[in-house]
Image (cartoon, rainbow, N blue to C red; front, side):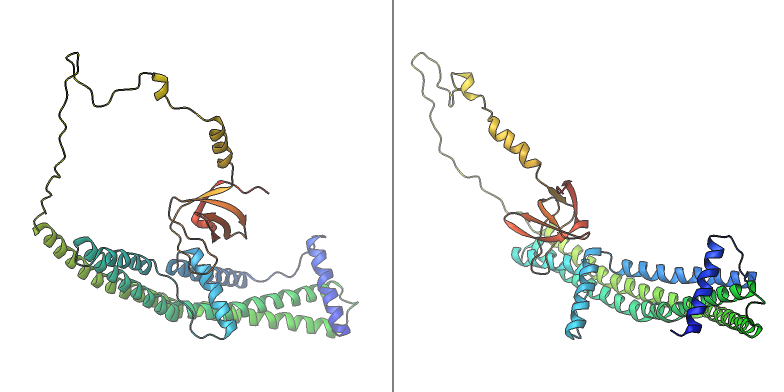
Length: 364
């Protein structure tokens, strides 16, 4: 950095300390500029937050979303063009129904219905994938371009404006000690940065027509998704009604009772009848005995760190631990704020934190 540059940095730092600590007043920007800056700031926050929430709307599972981001990053590093897509809930449900429907047999009422519904769920997952692609192309990508270019440019111009304001205020307070030419150049640079920042913010606000068009594209994508989903579900509902009518019209198979051998009752020698099962003569023999050691071990086992599964989790990568809702998993370690390590039914692996509720926390 040149000597002039170092001096300018010193001027700006000195003026900032004077304003923050000494309470000195700097040059005030006009109300129109402040109003424009406020509107641009709100627009910037709106675009960023809406973009984030749209991604959560399309991909609601945070664990799958984080895993997909990690996989896509690794794929780019390896030069792989195609990366796995987001696992749609409809597709996972469809695979489950198809599996058990085929295990039961498509010739059975329940098995055939599961297969029909599983295939429909797989079609819904494909429709949801199309929604993801349309929204990304017509809504997310244009909004991301605004964030990466327009909003960054505005922040850069505002930061540069603040720096030149500090430089100008420092030189203005030392008028007479600073050369008039240097003060005049500071004023010109300040006004130039103000005009550039004002223009960039106004350009952002003037593109509201494009932003509204992108919102309209989001609505069109959703409308198309619901239309296609309705077609799939109407077709599925018709097939389900046919299966219900078919199942109701089928005669039930009669189950013949299995004959059991009969035992003749024998008369006792004193004229009474022998009972089939006599209670034990000693009441204490029938009373259960409590083992103090086993109960103490049970209490100690509950103190072991563990958690309860809130949802089913199906592992997709090596080293992950699968479980079903309601399973109690032994905790062995917390990898980070998103992943636990634990064991269940002799298997050990990683699983997401937001899928479980901790019952006994890990000891640190």
